[in-house]
Length: 192
Image 1 (tube, rainbow, N blue to C red):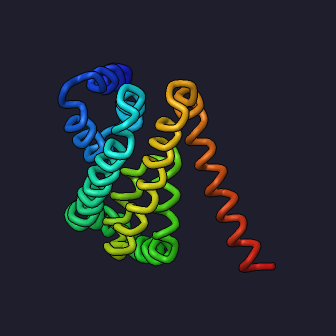
Image 2 (image 1 turned 90 degrees about the horizontal axis):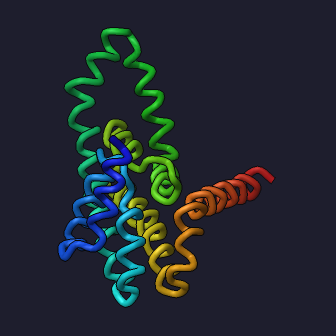
């Protein structure tokens, strides 16, 4: 099933409505769809490098709006489905503790999920469940998703096809290492 979705997503890159398809995929990927928009964005930029930053902008706006939809999925469904389950098992007090910890680090969590291979949709939904401040969520999403999509667009715009393999295979790892180094730096500054 995933392979079929992947192939279908790739096939959209050459379609005359590719930008609209990219917007839709970026939107739904932020809350429910398993295939990241990069799969469509990369061949679109290689085919039309002069439109790289327009394509990245479409990804950014659609992804953040989709993240907002994911936030509201978590916000709305938790009260009607999740909380009664926790109450049935007597675990609702644990959720309040989890919420406090999540919201303490929420901006960082959204930033990390927005640039790394970790599924952003999980964080958008969890942010809604824990009722992370909506403005913190939105700002973190814009920064993280903007960084992710514009770095890819800039690399493709500058280097073209030769950088494609690096992006597809290693960019997630590079972003993950960057986040680890950044977090480690903050830890060292705070505790040393």
